[in-house]
Structure formats: structure tokens, C-alpha cells
Image (cartoon, rainbow, N blue to C red; front, side):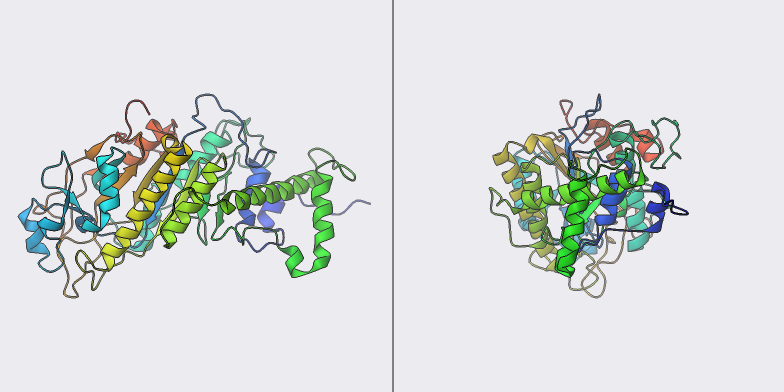
Length: 447
């Protein structure tokens, strides 16, 4: 019997039809499976020229981190004039070798250790033209790499381009996003640890996996009702040779493959995260997240990009000095980052992983009346790993030549992205960033 108006793959994607699951990210798996994922769910098809062993970890410092109290220009007298109550005394600043008058917040001692070990680079004065001081708008700008804050995420475009031949398919056009367009190669999506997937990782073809807890990242139909287990297992068994096989290319085959990809990927991730790290990670949310990432890398997952979030850094009041709330957040980040690289080194994977941190904006130069700081503009970024260009990159912005009380940026953040794409991921930054930005060299020539 013929069913009128059967679902096509495209209609399936548009409908939002999903498998019963407690994990909100399963639709991402369905989309990924339908469009690009290889049959070996977290496996990777070789693509010439792409360093498949290179991994990027992004740490988002949400809320607008105060860059001036993170990378401190203690050699500039104007810093202390602008911040008489919350400025970090020079005696407490962790001085950076090779950088006169620049140091780290005293709560960043673990990062200072990484700097001395040559695996931390400080990128100063990063921002963009005509800065937006809205959390949401500025975050969208950073995540899309577009000053209009429109379009796909920059990492999503990377996955589209490098993992499934986005723009290189049979049609030869980027607009060919139908599931009927055969990609050149398959690959696993990026993984974000958190309640929702960041816009930065949303592509046209590849959608990220997002989960807050590995325990929740599983099919839970049987928990809803025991009668759901048998049909679910039968669905997956059909893809493994048991029961009637679905015709290749049919809607049934598409649904079967989707279900199996989701199940196998979920099993792999939960199995990986279940392994105890080789290093003791701090008991903080960022420590938990980076500990999970370290476990997934150790387990050999082929994911190329992981994304974690730490915050909130929106310190409008009672920011405090060396021991204040801002310092506590910095210490949690620093402790987790050091544990992460200690664990990676024990695994033998430290040379494979570059970590980049960013925040949507910095804070104003002058403290406010509430002993805090308001939304500002340019701020530093950190880049970590044995492959980074050692030391301080770029000049610190002037504290006298300001833009309505805010720092003027020195380096465009899209240039930092371009440097990572070109130097580490070996990708075409112009195509992915949809523009030409001079790459900031954040990695060594040997990377």
C-alpha cells in the first residue's frame, strides 16, 4: 500500500520529528547523521591535507571578563588612577617574563606556570570595529565572526567545509544543503558541554552535539515506558543485519541509520566520560567540563572541536581585588586549565590539543561607583598548548587614548580565528570566515 505524501529526508528535517530522548541534543545527531556523519558514528573519513589529529578546545568566559584585571598593565600609572579600589597592587601581580610592565592576576598562578613552561600565549587588545556592548549581540558577533551577528557559526562553517565538503559537493554550491546532496566525506560533529549548543558550532550541514551530563545523554524511552524498548531495539537491529533490511537510499534506511548513529555515538561518549581522569580536576563546573573533554580525548573520539563555558564574569558591583569574586572565577578557570594540560600530557595527547579562551567583551577602564566595572570593549585572549607561539602577542591598548572611556582594540578577533584556522586546523580561513583577515600567528612554525 502506498502512503500518500510520504516523508522525504528534507521534510523529515523540517518537521522537527525526533526520537524519544532525555538529551535535548538528539535532534543535532539526527541532522548530523542525515547529512554528514559517517556510518562509523564517531569515526572519521580521511581528507587529504586536513590534520585529523589536531583538536581545538574553546573556553567561553561568559559575561564579559575584565581584561584589565586579568592581564594587568601594572607598568602604566593610569591603570591605578582609573581603579583606586579594585586595581591589583603591583607587588601581587604575577610578572610575565619578556613583557615589561605586564602581568597576570594573582589568582592566575596556574596559568603563570603554563606561561613559564612555554605553553601559554597571551594575546592582547583583541576586539572588533564599532564594538557592541550588549552581551547577546556581542556574543553573537564573536560566535558568527560577523559584525552583523548573522548567519552560521564560524566553527559550524569549519565543520561544513572540512568535514563534509561544504561548498565542494556534487552541485558545487554552498546552497546545496539538501540531504540528497552527497558530501565528499563524513566526520563527527563538534561537542559542546552544556545545556545548549553554542551558535559558534551551528553549521548548515553539521550540527553540534550538546549535553550537560553524560548520564542524561542517552535514549531514555524505556524509562518513559518499558514497551518502548522492544521497537527501539528492533529498529537498531535492522541496521545490523537482523530482520528485513531497508532499501538503500530509502526513507526507512535513512531513519534506521539515524537511530543507530545516535545510539552508538551516545554509547561511545558515555563510555569515554565514565573513565576516571588520570589527573585530579578541581571541583568546579569548568573543572568538570574540561575533565569530561580530557576523558573523551583519551578515549580516542575523533571530534576535532570541543566547547565549554565558564562564568558569569558580569562584575558590575563588588568585583573585588585579588581575593574578590572576579579573582575566584579566574582561579577556577586557571586551575581547570592546568589540570587539563597535566592530564593531556599524561595521556600523551598534549601536543594534539590547542585551547583558546575568549569573552564577548572586556570592561571599561575606570571602576564604577559600585566597586565594579561596566561593559567595555577590547580584552585579552589566552591560547594554550605546546604548539603556541610563546609569550605575549600584540601590544597592550593605551589607557589614555580611549574610545569614550573604553580601550581601542589592537587586534581583530577574526584575525585570531584566522590564525588558528590556518596555523592549526589547516583550513581556508577566507572561505570559513567569509572574508579576508590577516592571520594572527598564535602557533609556532612547526605546528
